[in-house]
Amino acid sequence: MTRDSSLTRARLLDAAFAEFAAYGVAGARVDRIAESAGANKRLIYVYFGNKEQLFDEVLQRAMAEGAESVPFDVDDLPGYAGAIFDHLVERPELMRLRLWRQLERPSVTSLEPEAFRRKSAEVGAAQQRGEVAQGMAPDDLLTMVLAVAQAWFLAAEGDGADTSGNRTWAKERLAMHRAAVVEAVRRISEPKGAAA
Amino acid sequence: MTRDSSLTRARLLDAAFAEFAAYGVAGARVDRIAESAGANKRLIYVYFGNKEQLFDEVLQRAMAEGAESVPFDVDDLPGYAGAIFDHLVERPELMRLRLWRQLERPSVTSLEPEAFRRKSAEVGAAQQRGEVAQGMAPDDLLTMVLAVAQAWFLAAEGDGADTSGNRTWAKERLAMHRAAVVEAVRRISEPKGAAA
Image (cartoon, rainbow over all chains, first blue to last red; front, side):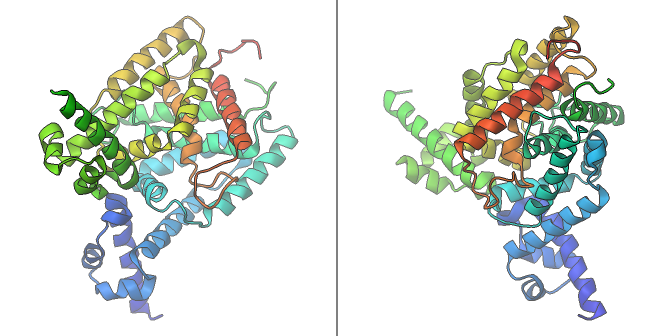
């Protein structure tokens, strides 16, 4: 691949990220992606295959970036949840991308299940060492930790701070919710008898 | 409204529920809804206004039904979370409807914020009585409880049980996850010093 073509590829992926986050898979327009990237639409098919494959590529890259920015830390699950929260505050489009995927591409197998299993195995080992609370299967405990970290972004019931639906919150409110995420995960994951 | 027209209206709402759960707002086809309800498409506009208004009506009815099936119980938050979980297992389309709403109709104000505030006020009062754990604002605690109850249905990372993406799980796996939901909410909400 030439330098030019890899730059074009990168521009297409960025444009596709924005388009998919806004409109989802069915709603995304390949023409708009090409135009926004300043590239020929034909190149999308050449580089990525069809629209669904482009979505999968965009999602996989976003998840890989996320995993790099927020490394899993079984020794500090509350801190890990807080870091996921921070990452989603910075990149709210990531959450949208994941929701579209859940609705429109549920059968896609990607790197995620494998990453999940690896984390879950670490949780299981930490439970056996007595460093993470027992009484829940590792998969379940990990699922709860991730759900708590993302709770704020899925609070469709309303979060009490903003009923207009536009997801901008005061810094202090975010800091407060972040502290609640960390505290909730501590309560869920801290082994009995640990110092309060 | 005549008996006939209210029957037609009910059939249209049922058909719209299925259509919106499958395709979302942008993807839903008014023609398909009318055909599936055996009604004239024009009646949709007469009864409900446009497609977006029909979606809002469908969502609001679904949420109201949910609230009726799963009454809020501040004295038993773990049981409440378990009941939400059961309701979503029975009606997975509800979760899809809520996700579409979050992606496509984020600015809709509905009954939800008010219902949320009412529950949150009950949580706050229970915290003051020392019956629910403190250290988190009532809104945050309630948001966590709801997130934990729904965690399983949003486990896009993979739940370890099924990587095919089709959301059917073994009964035993569901029962196990339900127990984990109840246990996680107990840990989050139980006041310090309560009997373990």
